[in-house]
Each structure stands twice: as structure tokens, then as C-alpha cells.
Length: 362
Ligand code: SF4
Image 1 (cartoon, rainbow, N blue to C red):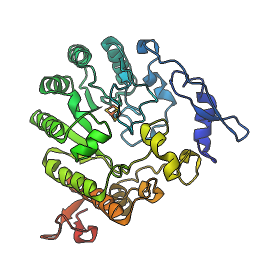
Image 2: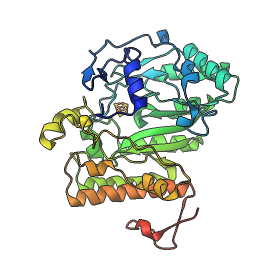
Image 3: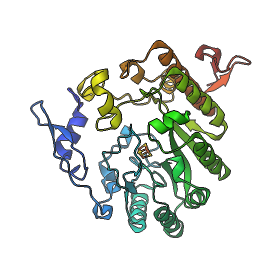
């Protein structure tokens, strides 16, 4: 995956290929002599209850890799399902499969109980691609959690606005859900249609209103720079973010579009834009972890900049780059303000406000 991987990554790759055999896609790994090899695709696993609980590997984690709160937040969170039935053109969910499969409620409860007993963890981010894709099974899971978990459980969910309704969100909140992260991607209905997102801006507003009425923390993911977009579309997205901001606790950081392999976004554009197998390029295959909150300048930049813009996958023109930067700046500042890390200089932070006109308050 990278030409000079870190020793930690090499360890995972060399020893982990067999353990990742459940993935339906190919795994690229080092053969130990510097060459990359790919495993053959595997069939999709239907019965997820047959898998051992990942949290049993807890003693193998070094909590210092994750956060000072590692005793409370379970490293890695939990997966209660795999796959997503939607067909968004950019989504890397081909890794877990398009077919939605889910664990039994009893199996999820058993993993949560074991993890809590072993570590004291009480909060579990659910990293399912689309936790709410099957309404009936989620009602059953929530009822089981409510009935059988005897510690103060909290969890978060990721989903799409069209996959929730008020009764479902109510059931989730009763079962300990405290936060829902909605994949929104664009504030322009024409772009949402072209990326096959399966939602409209009206769907998003309605879902956020339900979530806030129920006291849930809300987050929204937006993506900026689809090849179908112009600066006008990105500006529309920024204005939509402004509109829903009172209902949103956090916008996802970063968000410049990345064409992941295997997606229609990659297949349709890699030849024309010259990014074929970009993940093998050292300049592209890198990961910058969020800086510690104590490093204020880097932390602020992390929430406002996105290094992906410099990779320039889709050769944006200058108006497009400016529109993307402005949208990144806007949502980054929204987050920092919500975190109490920014306060507005009186009368200066408007739609065309610049970072330099905002004062830090910490
Ligand atoms: S709804 Fe979310 S998980 Fe499902 S295909 Fe779209 S982006 Fe991927």
C-alpha cells in the first residue's frame, strides 16, 4: 500500500492477511521482499455471529496509540453490521459489500458486556456503514440493549438521513445512542442526484430536526469537489451548511473528495484525470493523524485545511479551489466555535470572513 511502510504497518500486514480473509475484496500486502501482492477476493460472509468478538483483542492494544480516554472509549468501537444497500458513486463500502448483513442482538450484547467487564468501557462508537439500514433489526437491537445491558451504555451511529425516522431515533436514544452522524455530502439537490446519494436536502433537514428534538448530538459529513461540481455547487453546499448549522453540533473535518479504488468515481475518472493507482504513490498514500488539542495552531489548521486539496485529483480551476477552501474554512470554524476554541471578533465574521479576523479564546 505504501512503498516504505512503518514497521507497525508492516507487522499488521505481514501477520494479518490470513485474519483479514473475511473481507470480500482483495488485500494488498508486502511479500517481504518489497513487492506488493494481492489476495484473491473472498465470498461475502453471511453469518457474522460466527466471527470472534474483535474486542477480545483488547489486551493487544496499546492504549497510548489511541487517546488518553482509552479506558472509557473502546479502541476501534464496535461493528454490528456490514455493508450498505445504497449505491453512492464515491463510497468505499465495496470493502464490506453492498449487501447488508447484521449480527444478532444477543451477539452484540455479549460483546458489549465482555468489553465492559474487561476494560470498564461504557461508550462504543458504532462504525457500521449504515447502522439503520434495516429498521426492524435495529428496533430489536435497541430493545435488547435497553432490556439487557446493566451499565450506563452510550453509543454513536453513522447513517444516511433517509434511513431514519422519528420512532427509530427515539428507540435508539432510549437504548443509549447519544450521537448520530449523517452522511450528507452535498447541499445541492442536483449533485445529490448525480452521486446517487438517495437523499435530498429536505430529507436531511427533517432528520436533523428529529434528532435535535430528541436531544441527540448531531454531526454531518460533507464532501467537496466532485467532478460533477462547479464553484457554484460548492457555494450552494456552504450556504446549506450555514442553514442547518443550528441543528448540527459538528461538521466532519476535511472532506475534499478522494476517488477510492473500486468506486464508480474512480473507474469513471482515473484515466482522464491521470490518477490511476494513485494509492501506490508515496505523495498520496499518507495519513496525518489529528494533532493534540494542546497544539493550538496545528489543531486549528487541522480543522480548517485539507491536504487532499493539494493532491488535486480532479484538476480544479481557481474559482473551484477558492470555493472549496471557503467551505472548509466555514465548517472548520463552526466546529472550533462549538468547541469553544474560537470567538468571533465583533462584526467581522460574515459569509466572507477570513481566519485572520477570528480571535482564539483559548
Ligand atoms: S449511504 Fe453511506 S455507506 Fe451507504 S453507499 Fe452511501 S456513503 Fe456508502
